[in-house]
Length: 274
Image (spheres, helix red, strand yellow):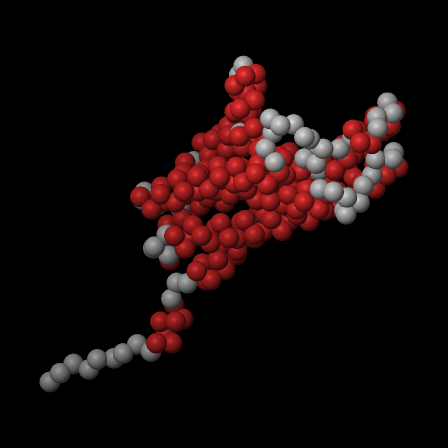
């Protein structure tokens, strides 16, 4: 007597198969269900738009009082300057997206569902990077339009069609997205919230301070390659300093930092236990 062999329908396998699309959908549910997501992105919106408009009013009035010629006043950069504080909120959230799962043990469930691990890594990059770019680009546009409306009253406002304006607005989204991806890499690498945030802000904020302490003969060749200064060139429309990188070159250098940190992070994810 032979035992009957019951074949599982192929449709059943399709229903439970782990695919990259399903992992991305899962990561989207996790991201939007976290309170830290709403708080952090809310803080980034307030800082980016609010400070951009505030700086535009203060700097525009001051420049008008001192009769600064319009060609010496970078109205685009002034209206987008809130980005530099908004990056703190985006960076912290990028770290928490990873380290929060390690702290709660949720990462075990994620990796059990997708044991190959790479789909989870890719899913987090796609979801967090996509959401960050979309919101950041919208924030940059609103900050630009609001800031220019105020600066127009002082004679310094420009339109979105002005040279470099559209690139700078999109650059806000690109810059903050790179910050977020750099934060994800730090989170995967260190797994500790404190350690990852310290590493992230060390790269963004401490390195420029140390660079300023270098002799000028060395600083001119080193500082332009530091992460934040290189990335900032994407919104810089008035500088022709030969010691600085071009807009897209600078953003590329900044993105390279994020790529290296993500590479370290995926190696750590593959080699370490959850």
